[in-house]
Image 1 (cartoon, rainbow, N blue to C red):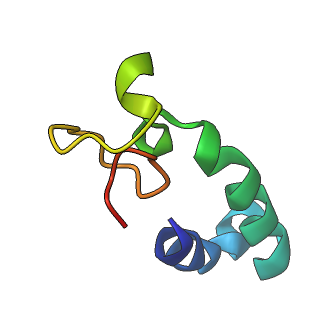
Image 2 (cartoon, helix red, strand yellow):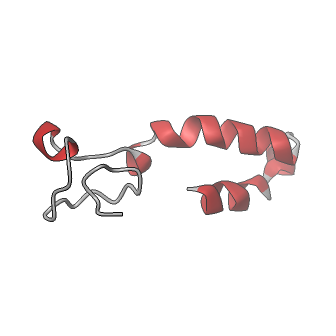
Length: 64
């Protein structure tokens, strides 16, 4: 997500924002988007699950 926020900040002038404003906006909004949310079931989200298909790096099911 951090890499994507950095990339999106390059388009700040198109949104009439400064680069810092765009980063702050993206940092606030992106975690609310479906792509970045954990899609695990409640059972899965309570601990490591090798069968988890969630793509969110913040997911508790993913072995770090």
